[in-house]
Length: 245
Image (cartoon, rainbow, N blue to C red; front, side):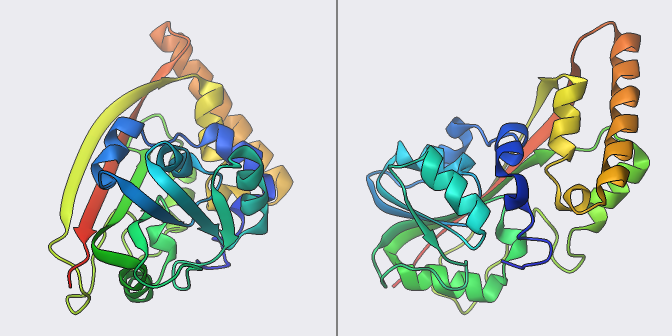
């Protein structure tokens, strides 16, 4: 995981955990093999996906390079084994994992190195599962805020695309996309945007001013609609591939 800006989220892990929506468990189940013994997670963050894994796997090893994220996760989910690690160097023995997973994190990784490492850790037939859960396009967003968030993504690695090099020992990659909408208050929407790296790394006064203007804008839209909440589009993009050999 890249240190800039990938390691900024642990600065306020509690804010990230509260305001970044988690992928619904019923969608994530598509990624997890039945009777999953050891599940390994790359870039676990504050544990949104880890919470799903601990209910569905006999043992969970959750890894993250960010000490702030690891400290939060270890406190919140004592049943998971929380360890320092990157997607390119997992602290797991070769051929022991039934599943290796990354939720809203793969875009921070070197895809060849991460795919190679997942293949090393997985048993034959084990599953590499990758997903993202994020907001869709909406006329609710302030244009400058949307541009800022999108500009933080690596232009050479589309955020919701997952490709494995053909020479890695995996079968065909399966893909599933599910769209939905959430009802959120203006305050909740602003909270969501404070979890993006481009916003976190702004100077304090600039960040407060931008989010303040966004809140005024969203509250005005809610008044126009005569509602306390606004409809926010979300989509889940999921990929899975089985280890061959």
